[in-house]
Amino acid sequence: MLPFRLGTTSYIIPDDILPNVRFLADKVQDIELVLFEVDDSPNNLPSPEGVAELAALADAHALTFTVHLPLDLRLGADGDEGHVSLVKAKQVMGRTRALEPWAYVIHLDGKDVKDGASPAQLAQWQANSMRALDIVANWAGGPERLAVENLERYPLAFILPVIERVPVSRCVDVGHLWLDGHDPLPYLLTALPRTRVIHLHGIAGRDHKSLAYMPPEKLNPVIETLLRENYAGVVTLEVFGEEDFHSSKLALEETLRKLRENQALEELRELKEQWANG
Image (cartoon, rainbow, N blue to C red; front, top):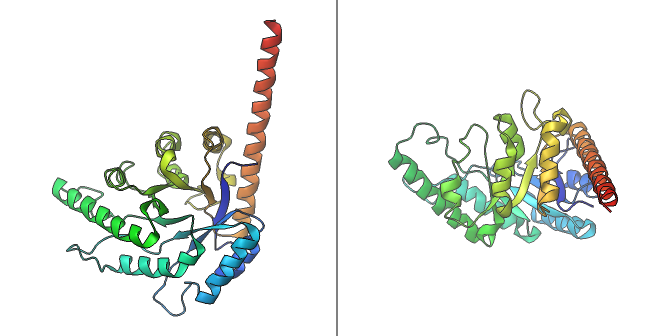
């Protein structure tokens, strides 16, 4: 029995969100609804009827949902609170609120300042990001429902000045840390008390591939840490395809088997030492 809720994305089979949720309902405990193109026609924002069916599937299978917002969050260049990312966030949250999502996963758009910005520019970006999170938190039902994700090719500490001053939750994307060549454990351990969602995916030329590509010396310590710390949030296998999903689950199951086997051996060794010491 895992302490965390195992999940994956809403795009595992080549079909729309509802068929994917029907397919996954007995295979995972959480499904990340990956929403995009919400202003276009056709788009993948569930209709009110679709949301009702998603809610019924969740009730029938004890499922939760995480919702990945479609755009990186920001204010406009002049602090405009009507920026398209906020407009789309409000639209998505209004449509999915009935699902009572475990978390809304959010990126902060800092690409204009992450490399070489002046202190004044960086301070303005931080203030704007805090304001954007405050606005969206009101729509989400509280800042703890927002899970701010670390992004690839960003400095490790880039979002920290923002999230240290706004009581949001965190989404730790372990795959992004692997992609950038970081050891994820120090970052994960620091973030874990505020982490509602963890994204796991392998690296094979690019990210969001099967966990089967990750050697045990990289994957095992991550899972061992989650078990040791009794992490009770969502762990999303953030892959996009049936083969990657199934092989990721097998890789995770093999990791768990080895960890439990090692734990049993360690417990046996301790017992032997106790008997030897009388």
